[in-house]
Length: 328
Image (tube, rainbow, N blue to C red; front, side, top):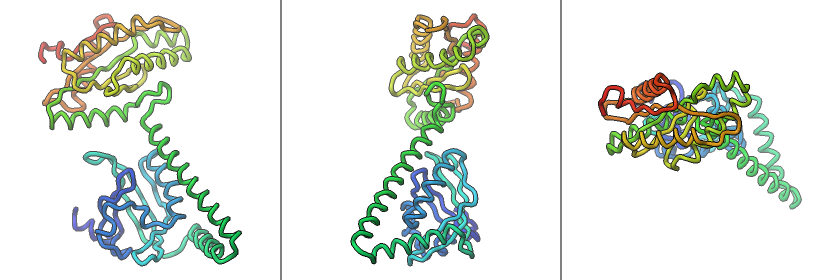
């Protein structure tokens, strides 16, 4: 890491999506009196009080999942001696080499802020509760149980928010963002193992005519039925996603050109023969198989060109990109 960042006038830290610290600069270490070994590979919440952990779960994680960043979050950290350090936190997520990471910048505050007063008052109330009779101790234990319950609820909420961020709300399939992440992962695996894989882009034929003739509610029902057909006729290892509008996409691990053509034709026939609730539906399919010369952009472009050819040649058919120029 650049020495200028290590000695920057503000604290800097990198954590993963689970909150584990993977990098911290010297400014932050000096701020809290920590050594690098004290923090590396530890959870960021290990240097927070219970009240601040609650605030972190309530505000930081949900906003990062939804918007990719958090601006001007007021937080109090603990130093190595247990002293409070009021800071202003900015966070931003980005995709690292293998997984999502979050960059955090900490600016030490010279004044206490209103919520810190509330935390100190709560702390005094807890300390007072420990000094009173057994009745107060029972109430305090109940309070702790309630806090733990709320933290569990927040963790479930965060998991739900994470799921919603990669799910298409209409069909329940994974969305384009999730598919691209999976595609990038398969590309990395390909260059390590040379294991082939393919993908299919499918377009519902004359979908605009379905909307114009039967209405958008029927169009939405067609999309949902199509999604269920794809899920029911795909392997657990496949990645099925709604790519956008009436386009759907499937990632087929360990499938070469011939196998992907067979899989595409099987799906095309299943859709054509399915007992649709409102109107007959067919699909056009474009297939492509990844090669060592491809990127995530090029394989999608090849599948899209193959799909365009299927539609241009009358629809309700399968075209593999390799057939466009006769190469494999």
